[in-house]
Length: 84
Image 1 (spheres, rainbow, N blue to C red):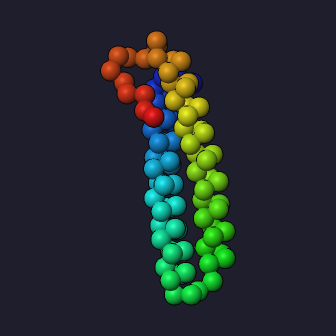
Image 2 (cartoon, rainbow, N blue to C red; image 1 turned 180 degrees about the vertical axis):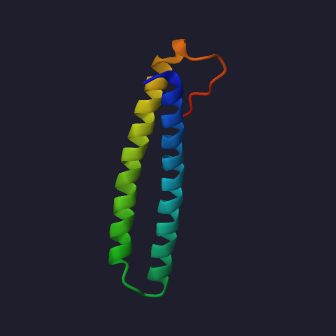
């Protein structure tokens, strides 16, 4: 992968991580609201578990891409921000 493609992939990975954090926060708020009204949270907790596991995968992918970008930095134009 060339440097520009690596950077594009890293930018997408960063977006996925950010969006994942937002989804997890919303799901936790939903669970709290359900608990507050005494409703069953089983399904909401399962969804939260899936979101959190996906987040771990997204963060690992982002970190791998960031490392690839760092390794390719010699071939990159100066002034790029390599994220993370």
